[in-house]
Every structure is written in structure tokens, then in C-alpha cells.
Amino acid sequence: MGSFIEHILVSAGWPLAIQVGLAMTLLQDSNSLPSEVQTHQLVEQPQKASKDTESPDTDPRELSFDSARQFLEFLGIGSSDFGDLADGTSWQEHENRLLRKVLYHLHVHFDWWDLERLSRKHPGWEEVLGNFERFRGEVIPVEGVIEKTEAIELPAEEARRLGFSRFYRVRLRASFPGTTDSSERKAWFEVFALDVPGVWTAKEQIEERGGAYLLMLKKGPEEGPGPVIFAAAKRVAWYPNTLLGRLKMDVGLFDLLDRPPSPEVPREERVPPRVARFRLGVHNRECFYQLLAAVGRAAPGKLLEEAKRQLAAEGQTFTSVVPLFNEAEKNRGRLVLLTGTAREVLRVDVPDRDIRARFGITHYYQIHLFTEDSQGNPLVVCVREVPSKMPTGSGPTYAEMVTVAGFFFNTWAYRRQPDEGSNSKEPVWQLAPLIIGREVVWHPREAPSPGPWIPLIAAGVFLILLGTIWWGMMQTLRPRGSGRNYRELGK
Image 1 (cartoon, rainbow, N blue to C red):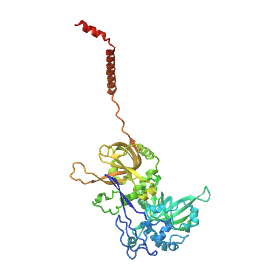
Image 2 (image 1 turned 90 degrees about the horizontal axis):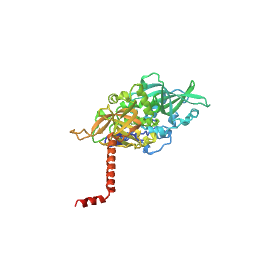
Image 3 (image 1 turned 30 degrees about the horizontal axis):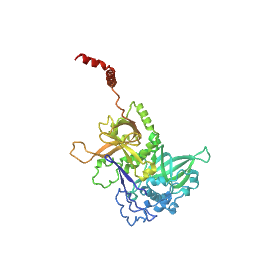
Image 4 (image 1 turned 180 degrees about the horizontal axis):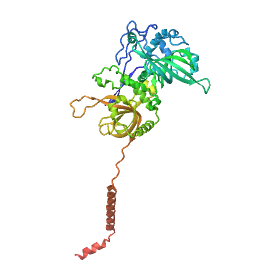
């Protein structure tokens, strides 16, 4: 289905979008898992399928599906497979076979855009529970409270075949309207998820807001005040009770920034290993754009107001940039307030179809910001909008004073021109903190105010001009005859 895009930002030209290929391996035999699983490779051509993993002639990216169930049927999971699930019972050992196949396809073939656009939005849960067969295999977005998470490790051989070594069993409690206007029902979801926020794995009991796009598997037994539904998910999101969580940012995505980046796109110059993980690519793309979408949901001025409130409680006016340079991992997701000189403000157009469709993001602005305490090192700020009258551009003469509130994303690596006097003529790598905000406050440069001597000069010029006019008038009004008489007497 939809392709991943590695959005790479460079200092000189900024947006440089590189299409990446998604290596896809489809099952021909719907009753068996593949013996070899192809992994995602950027730009590389998909490897030839073995006899056990022959792909159908039709590429699913060329097709259009109306539902997740329809897509699963194309991938080889049909009614006969779902028929093995026994409603009204707890999860059975023999049902793990279908579960592994579903998780494999969520891992390999479903991207975030697929899950969102194929999901059934806001169905009536009474209808879902009353006619579950109609919704089996469909994707429904669910939010609620996460109560428990358990990691399930796979045997080495099975992990090799599936392409992942573990998954998680997550218990999610959700509420929905009952049959009367004032009633409320609860349901519990036992979710088999490929990924969860790392902080949950260290806790036995959890009480955190979260959500996921759930692929419905079966209805379990009634348990106390509500039913149990078994489902599968690509990931369970975390929405903590913070400003960022309330803006519906999956804060757990910051975990992905510590994972190794995807294989590099072949290019003329190798990227040094020490900076590879700081570039924007497939491994951190979802986190970057979710954060950019989250700040867009904030009301104008909300981030600035909240940042000022937090800093006032600490007795500060602006955020020190030192921790952003030196302790990036500890400050991810932190709301900061910065002011300084923008030496570059450029618009970046987003060509990615899925990002435009999911988040409505068509462009953003990138700013090179120098603050008083950054010691001549730039911070990079990405915002959704800038004031309409604020000039954009770059170069030695460009300098605009701005203030911005935003969330710290991570250290970012980009290319810049070498310093003057350097023997190298090639661009060098620069590391900079990357902050994502909604807007900037622009402080236009005021016209120079007139000094106290300007009015004095103006008054002097006025008096000289007035005197000149008076002298000219006196010469004009002087009697002409007296001059002639004087000359006559002097003969």
C-alpha cells in the first residue's frame, strides 16, 4: 500500500524529498506464513520472491480498497480464517495462528495512512457488539485507559519468519454511550499490538490515556459490567495528561528516535554513522509529522501562553538552550520559549500524499535561530505559519527578531557550507536542536528615531530660509531713484 517517504532537510536548499521503496512480500498460500520475510529497504528493489513467498501479479499499491477486511482478503485472510475464531470465549491457543498472520500483515503491508483511511469512523458500539460478525476484520479507532501491558517474546525461528521478535498484549478500558441518554457502558479490549510506549513495559499496572486503530478479531466473554473484545494493532498510542498529550500527540513515538535508522538511501557521499540517526528519515518521520500536526491543533498563542506560565513558575523569562544542545534525550517533548535573530526563514512544501491526507500539512517554515546563549550556534525551528508581513529569505543581510514557543523534538543533522578560511570546500555536517511550534512572534525593526539635534537643525534651516526671503523682499521694495541721484552727485 502507500509508500514511505524519507523527508530529508538540508541547509542549502532545504526541502529535499526522497521517495523510498517499500519492499513488500505477499502470500500466495493463504493457509501458511511465509518462510522468508522481506524487510523494508529504502529505494532498493524488492528481492525476488522464493517459491514459498511468491507474490500475486497485482501490486496492492495499484488497487483501491474500501475496507480493511477487503484488503485482508486480498492478502489471503478470508472468511474461512476468521471462522476459526470462537466468539464468547477467552483467547484460545489455536487462534494464535491467525493472530500471527494478522500481525505480520500489519507489520509489512499496512501503513498509517491505510489504517486511518480504511477505518470505520465512530460506529455505534451497541451495533458492533450486537452484530460483531459484520465488523470482524475491520479497523475501528478506539481511545480509553490503558490498564496493563505484557510483552510476548517469539521463538527465534518464528521471529525470523515474521520480521519482529515480540509483540504486546495490552488491556484497554473504553467507555461509550449506552442505550439511554444518561447511561454509559464500558468495554475492555485485549489488544495484541506490535509496538507500545517503552515506559509502559516497566510497569505492572498502568492508568494512562491511550488509543489505537484496532483490527477487530473476536468478541470475548462478558466480564462484569462490560464485554471483552480481542483486537490487533500496529501500535498503541500514549496520550498523557500534558499539553502535548491533550493535543493528541502520541508521546510514545519519541522512543523511536533512539532506534537505529533505516538503511541509507544510496548516494554519492556516505553519511557518517555518528550523524545518521539524527537525520530525518523513515525511523523518525511519524514522530516529526505527528508533532507538527499536534501544534497545529493548538489555539493561536496557546503555546506561548503556556510556556510563559511554566517559565514564570521557575522564575525564568526564556528557556536556556544549553540543555537542548547537551541533553537532547532528556528534553524531548519539552515546551520551550526562545527569542533571538532569525538568519534564515524558508518555506518547505510537503509533497508526501499521506501526510497531506492525514494531517492536512501542505507546507511549513524552517528557521535558523540564534539566541544570546547559543554562542553563535543555530537552533532550527519548524513552524506551521509565520506572520503574513514578515519577510522570508536568507543570506548575510537577512536578520529578523522573533520569539517562538514550541516543543523540542531532537538533535538534527544537516549540511552547511564550510567556515571561511577552511581548507575544505565540501559542505560539513552540523548538529542543531530542532524545535517544532505553531507560529512565531515577529518583532519588526523600527525606523531610527530622530535625535535631539534634528529639530535644532530644522529650526536653523527654517530661520536661514526666512531671513533670505526677508532680505530679498527688502531689496525689491527699495526705491530705485535714490541710486540714480547718488551717481549724479558723484560725477
